[in-house]
Length: 67
Image 1 (tube, rainbow, N blue to C red):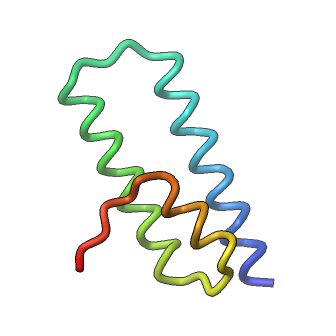
Image 2 (cartoon, helix red, strand yellow):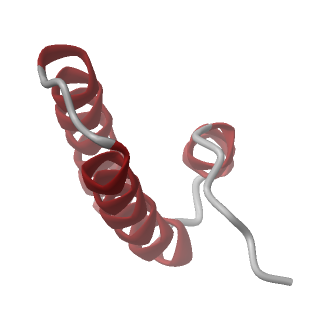
């Protein structure tokens, strides 16, 4: 049940981010702020999920991993 919620949240975040990147002409600073906010939100979802497919999808979004 929770995993479906996380998957929907991921899909929504990805769709919103992709739309922002396509529709708007941003300068570099705005782009980096949007990208950082996107990655921060994805990291929160990543820490909550136990679904390996969702985990892999989030990693494919090039979320920086601190090790």
